[in-house]
Image 1 (cartoon, rainbow, N blue to C red):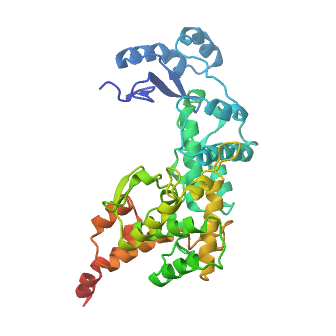
Image 2 (cartoon, rainbow, N blue to C red):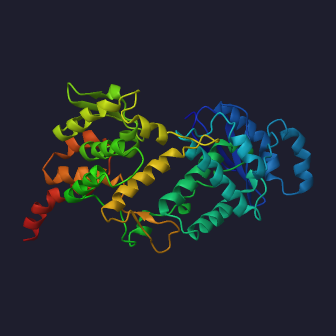
Length: 392
């Protein structure tokens, strides 16, 4: 029974954390209260609650005051923390989130600052933020023309911040409410989605990259990066930051530890890609397969935020425009355009080509990564023939 909540006639004895102390939650004048019992022993906690019974059952200020001194040994005054000071405290907290990129760390800060600005008229301290206030922020975001995914990421960040600073407030995390999150189906009618390249479009991309009249920075390396994307299905960053020690030309294999998922995948080198990789030996100068592009991609600003990745991505999109495709499209109700074609489209193309060729789904997953939801999109046709027979 230890560790579980215990309901009493006047309230509930419970734990916030498995290894933490017990708390006593009760109603006083229509308001929910919670106090730490400063013990991890359940029986001792229940015994301490009995000492608080007169306080909880009191109906006048005088009686409550009379028992406050007796209960003071149990109830520690809650530490106050102004919303304006939250980020400074959170950013130094040992239990704070530790995103892998400077960009995401900065996103935590900017999301919280946006929240503080919106709720300023309703709350000044972190303890003053009830679900009603978080709902106001969610409504604000719904009217700001951001995607469902961006909306939900912001709620998740704020939930993490409030969970980390739980000692500065009482009661449940105000961002735990499911209604704060938006549902993906809200965007199912926008009709714009990521598209894969056809084989003809892929050939056109490579042709343009070989055309001497087309100019783009580190063009020879970018051509190799495009070939890697086409023949391995790996993400942009994984292709650009591929290292020579992960390429075995003798055994014709490539090993990739995916940056996004941390998964290790092994990929055989296709004959056409093998020829391209051998050409790259001519510029080998350090650990990176495409050294100039990798150096540019890894550039950061004074705050440690990556800025080079966007520059290289712009070049990759420029190549797509060379074959007459528009990388993004405007969607009604969205502030930013939605990406239709990008380097990531090569990952979709890889899955599509494998499905068309009858490659087993498990094999494709072993190359793209076992959690790739892209594969499901292109392998739904497997049951089409059986379904048609059933309908007939």
